[in-house]
Length: 333
Image (cartoon, rainbow, N blue to C red; front, side, top):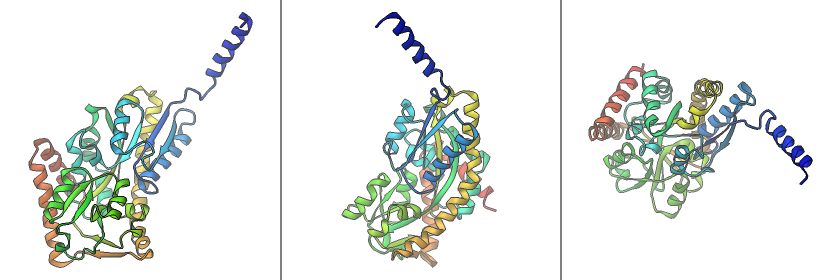
């Protein structure tokens, strides 16, 4: 190549590199689910960032474990291949066991109470800070939904849980409550639970009803059971701290403001989505059962006992649990 040609090529490369937008940071947001509040959160967050700061940050959304299951996405956050994840804090109890207090059973009355609790400043400060030392920065928190049970055989009484193997999230705050009602909690990703129920490897799953409708559980089972006093599922939006700290200050501001601004509308969205999900389940021939009377009272007692038992085993969890109890009470109205 002649010197003149080399100079021309170098000038072209430098010119292209200088074009606005090509050095735009990319924020990959992953979630294990699809067509639910977590997926909707990510999409609205991307749209809000694009509108508020065009050209400053490109947000890409990857639902349904496209970036891997929760464990792999967490690994991606720590090594920098994933910038953000939205999901239940229980999936990162390996980072800090205090995350599991978000789903402590027997504390939150209903979805509206959960929405108020998600906005409590003291609880948010605690949960957002749990992962900081391990490189995870919490920046958003919304309610996902209350726990429900989709089972191969109908559960209409507390005794019907006896001997069942039920898919749960991976933390003692989920496995211990199952033991209290005579069942065994089996931790596994959402994507594996459907096949496990279909094959008979497990007898059911415990999670939000919107998971059951999104993943079309009604093609496998027809019964859902609900009970007051179970745990509530929250979704935590967290980013890789190292990645966030390297962002320009104006981009950091946009990320934080966009996440915070979304929360009220997403809490309203998820409350509405949960209520519609009951109709969706019934429209596909599904049955919704509810514990009542003595069964309901005993269930609620066992759930609260389970949370207290888990908290007593670790001083750090105990302190976080006591905060959760206090903030739940303060927001109960």
